[in-house]
Amino acid sequence: MAWFQTEVRLAPRRRGFHLVTAEVEAALRGMPRFSVGLLHVFIRHTSASLSINENADPDVPGDLDAAMNAIAPESFPYAHTIEGPDDMPAHVKASLLGSSVTVPIGNGRLLLGTWQGIYLCEHRDRGGPRSLVLTAHGETP
Image (cartoon, rainbow, N blue to C red; front, side):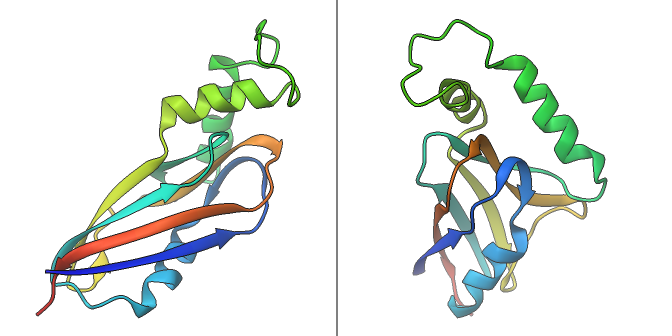
């Protein structure tokens, strides 16, 4: 059983759902070639989250963002407002979606479905750079 861990710093993105699969895969190029294993992707922030969802239809990210904005609108009477009107809704959205995803690894590659991708879900208007911790473990041939 082998372990691999690295950190990825993502460039700042506007509010919305952004595919980061290619950036995650690029960071894994130095990892051992696992015949079977798991990749755990963790975001080190409380106002952004991660999700695995459809990566083919360009309408999906916008629809996901619109749905999350309807679930946690800025107009709700939040008590925590010191960091601006987009902060507390961002925390709610991050709590709903979660701070990590796990992807199986087989024959040295991520075993995402045909239409699946890893999304950074940026819930702030200007969230800044985001950090992901990638931890993989598995069996090597």
